[in-house]
Length: 365
Ligand SMILES: *Cc1c(COP(=O)(O)O)cnc(C)c1O
Image (cartoon, rainbow, N blue to C red):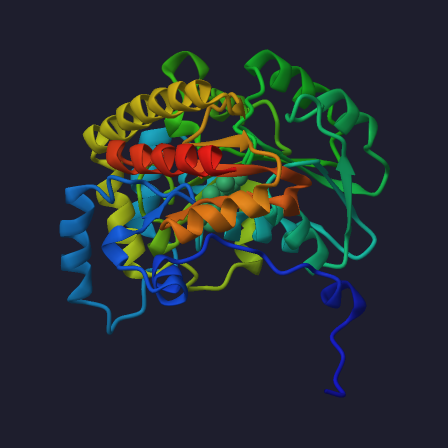
C-alpha cells in the first residue's frame, strides 16, 4: 500500500468491542442459546414494547430520508428534559456526540483531557482530529478532578468526564462536579458523559441539566443505548448552550440519525415504566452479582452503572475459560486494567450462569 494515512490516524488503536454471540458460537462450536453475553452493557430486557411498535410503524416509511432535524424527537426531549429545542444535538449513538464536539472544537494544535481508565472513545475522537489527549492518573479508579483541572493549558479545548465512568463504574458527587465546573476556564468545554444516568438511584441522579444556564461551556451527553435498550439502532443526544449546538450541527451529517431510531426514541421516552423495570432489574442483578462475588472471594470495584469490574488476576486466562463455557465478558487490559474483567449485569439466569462458571474456573485452578 503506497498511500499512507496521516501519522495521527495510523497511531489510533482500533476500538475493541464485546465479542458478538454469533462469533463465539462459530469459534467454539457452541449453540447460540447456550451463550450468555455480559460484555457490552446492553439492556437484558431488550426494548420497550412501545418502541417495538413504533419501529414496526417506522419500517413502512424507510424509502424516505429521515427528518434531518429530528423534529418529533427534539420536541419530546425538549419537554422531558426541560431544555430549549435549539439546545439539543442528536447523534448516531452518543459516541457521535463525542465526535461532533471534537470535530467542531479541536484542531491539531488542541489538547483534550480525560482520566486514566475512562471511556475509550475519548482518545479515539481526540486522535482523529490530530489533537493531543492528556491522560490524568485516576484516583481510586475514578476521575481526579483537581488533577484534571491542573492539567489545563492554553491549548486545552475539551475535558471529557464520564459519570458514572465506564469501565470502572465510579461516580463523582454533585458538589464536587459543580465546584469543578466553576473552576474550568471559559476557553475549555466540558463534555459530561451521562450514558448510565438512568441506572442511578434517585438520590444520585445527575442535576447537570439544571446547570446548563450557568455554564455555557458544558455539553451533557445521553444515550438510548443503555437503559432504553436501543444500542443497535444508534441514537444519543447532547444538551448544551444553543451556540455550541449550532457548531456541532454544522459538522453533523445531515441524516446521521435514521428514521427508525428517531421513532423508537420518541416511543421510549414515553415509557417510564420500561426504564423503571430496567433500573429495578439492574439493582437486583447488581446485588446478586456482588453477593456471589463476595462468596467466591473475588474483589470488585463498587459500581453505579449496569456493569461491574472484577479483579481476577490473569484476566486474559479467565476470559478464555469463560468463553469456552459460553460466557462473554469484557477484558479491559486496554484500559490499563489487565487484572480485571468487566461484567455487564444481565438477567437473573445469566448472572447465575456467570457465577456458576466463575466458581467452576476458580475450583479448577
Ligand atoms: C456505552 C457508553 C456510551 C454509549 O455509546 P452509544 O454510542 O450511545 O451507544 C457512551 N459513553 C459511555 C461512557 C459508555 O459506556
